[in-house]
Length: 198
Image (tube, rainbow, N blue to C red; front, side, top):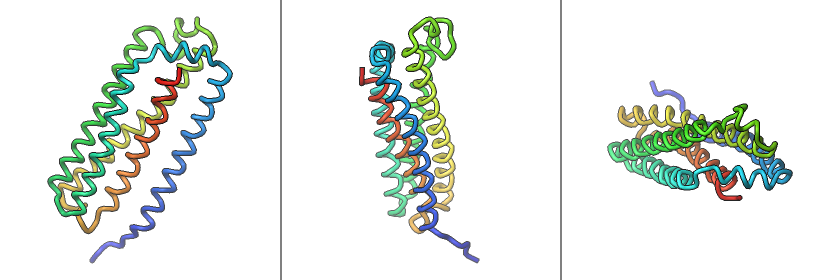
């Protein structure tokens, strides 16, 4: 007995979920922009404390991971589970690498006493306190989305390897790809806001 599938409903549901995520981060971007407008000099000073090299490297990693998930979907549609699995594995590796670099960056900032409610940060201007509060909140929320994405990608890898996702049933992998692209796009907005606009 074949189970009922509603691929169109699944895609619509995913797009509605993505819209809610866009609204969430859109609100945070507006909040960031309004605080930056009120504290331009403090935000400028605080932004110089971030590591642009690591931020740039992480951007390249996520852009590459978007390509690898697209290739995974392409190959599963062509019936090549092995290559699809390999590109899924590459996407997972790149996601872990992104989180690892973000961990190194956060650890360095915390080591310098720049974390929410730290004595060193509280001794700075209001704008710098706001900047780092937003930095940890927004990159932390994004990191949580990357972590959730890694769990979903891992589940997709298992399903691809078992043949439950194949050339006839690949919408779950497509929906996962949409989620992963959203995670990448959010970072593409976060990167210039925190690292480049000084």
